[in-house]
Image (cartoon, one colour):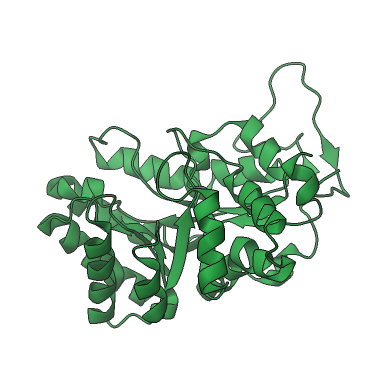
Length: 310
């Protein structure tokens, strides 16, 4: 039996996925699997940007073209905007990026400042992490934290310590990329705990099932963080299917794969559960600044009564 049969009728919110790096086939597959919304955190391109205009264009694409592209497949697209930790180490460029961030964080569809935090835990990373925490406080936006791949436990603790130093309510902070080593402290301190399901690394879905069984659904949310690397944009519904097969209740699955993400990011004022009572009308004859997701000779899908899974 396909995992799609197991989760038929469920809906999912992937609160960390880099759709700029994915194809329209991925959007269609996600929609077919019940993904109704995504959050795309700003991150790096795989190679260093060399000028502030590349950041400007990238941020503009997150609130513009990518939001439109998702809608063409019935998926609501939100984003978090920030200077990623890896590129904080280029301080001359980082200063310029900090100047343009206020131009984007107040735009429609921006539900937080992120993903920010630590990579190598350098002084420059800490400097711009702190600056962006202040920006989030001023804007009244949630914060989406990237925890480091190296020295994760120390980096996670340090990220939370600094957020508290700046007077942020832990309930406004989503600490992402957790594992078994970090989850207890994150939850004990009142923060939201995000988990990334990656093939071969970070968290696998078998391990995720055990985490949910041990800690329950409160303040836990699951994502794919699919990007230009080896990753799976269907990791969220596949994990939901495994949880269901392992006897986890539908209500718990709904919380960790959909509702908790809405609750956390609803604090931005940009999103609510009521938004998802009806699916998006799909009209692929539409264009964004003259651009379409279609190519020559392709018939547009126009569906005014779309369903999540057929």
